[in-house]
Image (cartoon, rainbow, N blue to C red; front, side, top):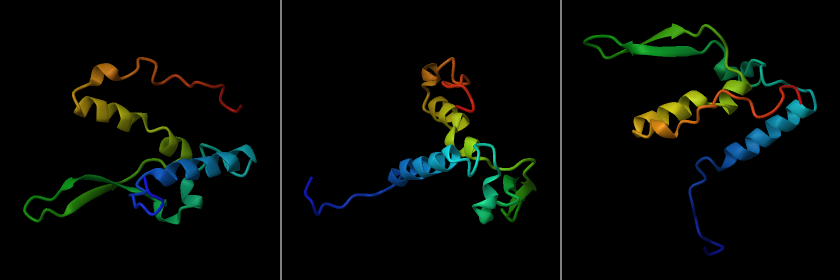
Length: 106
């Protein structure tokens, strides 16, 4: 690759963002289970798309029952499982996907 080559950043910033958030957790400034809307105000009272109205195609929403946490953002196992199922390779879903590889709080 040339020094002046261009490329799409895409998800490259996710790693840096997660590292910064984990450092904040390590310093006791936030926890994995805090409501992220305290930091990201646009995520306050999230709405969930439930479908579309007949004829108009207008989206219909319902209010979320909970709030978004860093844990739900960092550990998106549902998306991972769905991705593998949709690709027709659900046999690759680890059986211990729910297992936490560390002791919580350490």
